[in-house]
Image (cartoon, rainbow, N blue to C red):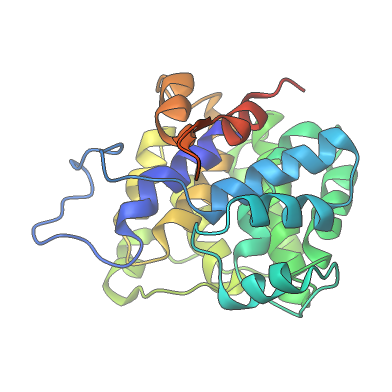
Length: 263
């Protein structure tokens, strides 16, 4: 799931604005002002839940309270503060950005779809939230297991009713910030489908006005599975961005350690 984490980090600095003269095909992907966000924290929390065999809600609460200032939405913050384990009917893209590990870990598409739905329900139990999580995890599973882009496109269109027919060049002039699953998933999947590598997928994300860290996380996770990696020194980048001083000034390796934990 390194491609999902690194997609989040690469997109972090462009989430709300891009500098004058921004060139998506030339800009450096990993700069000093990049950082991990809630997308990374929750993606690693999903891995923790799967490997430890604990409920997803418990893992999200543990990681969310350990890393409280990484850009959570208002409703998720309230969920964390209340220590609830029940969904709040959200259809935000947070359900889809955290499931890359599910798509890579489980052995059948049926298991992947079931676990992705389970991971969503504890927070994003709106039908669109669940659908977004299942679609993202399902695409990752198919990408990892040798399915073609044509087959992945067909899977999405036949099972989720997302419109993938509009290419990026027609999306760019009218694109806008959209944090819903129904707005985010079609864009993330098209960014992957029109890519030729993990890096080109992330640059596709940069080319559109969108929630770049989350779209980068979703699309980057699928692209990583499809292309067999990111083409970058993943461990060096994970060390650079995930290992930070905690409130006591000591290096906190917990997030990095779980991101790197073997299956």
